[in-house]
Amino acid sequence: MGGHVYTNFKVNRFSVNKTLRRGSEQYNVVTEAAGKPALTSQHVIACCGLYSDRVAVLSGCSPEPRIVPFRGEYLLLRPEKSHLVRGNIYPVPDPQFPFLGVHFTPRMDGEVWLGPNAVLALAREGYSATDFNWEDFKEILRFRGLRKLVMRYWRLGTQEALRSLLLAAQVRQLQRFVPELQPSDVTRGPTGVRAQAMDTDGRLIEDFVFAQGEGEMGRRILHVRNAPSPAATSSLAIAEMVADKARDTFGWTTQ
Ligand SMILES: Cc1cc2nc3c(=O)[nH]c(=O)nc-3n(C[C@H](O)[C@H](O)[C@H](O)COP(=O)(O)OP(=O)(O)OC[C@H]3O[C@@H](n4cnc5c(N)ncnc54)[C@H](O)[C@@H]3O)c2cc1C
Image 1 (spheres, rainbow, N blue to C red):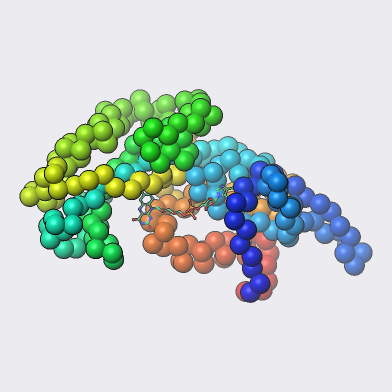
Image 2: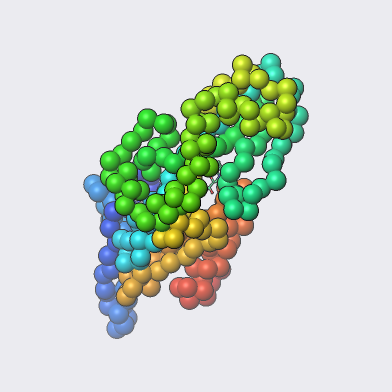
């Protein structure tokens, strides 16, 4: 349909410009990224994951809900032990912490991933335990919501952090599902960072959050500030929902 994908285009500013078209005023959104030609469009839909709160602020939205980064680390089952896991194994989720609870995932390429855990990351893109970003860290410390969450669940958080450091402790948790599993059967695997939306009371947001800012600019930009997991598995259905939302919000009449 004539779309373009611009990579390495880190949006750092939105503005609106006004033009006269057939005698009537028309507003357009100008989207800018450092060192790149600006893009002009009638509307913008922003789905910025780990940065969705910061990008929403650019068009006058509230900074809340904030995104708090939680690293999710996987272990890999050694290939010679892959017979231990013949299908997906999932724990019954705890409704209070739906993202906690490690699972066993045999993948198309034959690898078996065990995890992920959930450990507070010290950088938005803190994919490794040593990744640290001072600006992100300051923001995390200052956020009242996270302080409240930590006060409430420090014990659980400490256990999760210890398990992240000690392979044997992580394996002990996995043995609840596969008792034969031994620490020597696993190696450290890949990690991801969850974009956990949180309110100022430290509540984890579990539903979709859409937002618009103020004025002509705000009216033309729709932010998807939270897409609860499993948002990758459900991405096509979510895309339809976002398109419907945009149609209603912007008054589009065509498909
Ligand atoms: C460890 C882990 C395990 C998971 N397991 C599962 C699972 O089993 N099943 C499942 O369905 N989901 C899972 N998820 C969740 C899933 O990955 C996310 O829900 C999904 O990726 C969210 O998609 P998104 O498009 O909202 O955000 P993202 O995929 O994060 O995309 C956001 C995009 O916005 C871009 N962006 C950010 N800021 C800017 C900016 N300023 N300018 C321009 N672009 C910007 C980013 O580069 C990125 O491409 C898991 C996540 C983690 C971390």
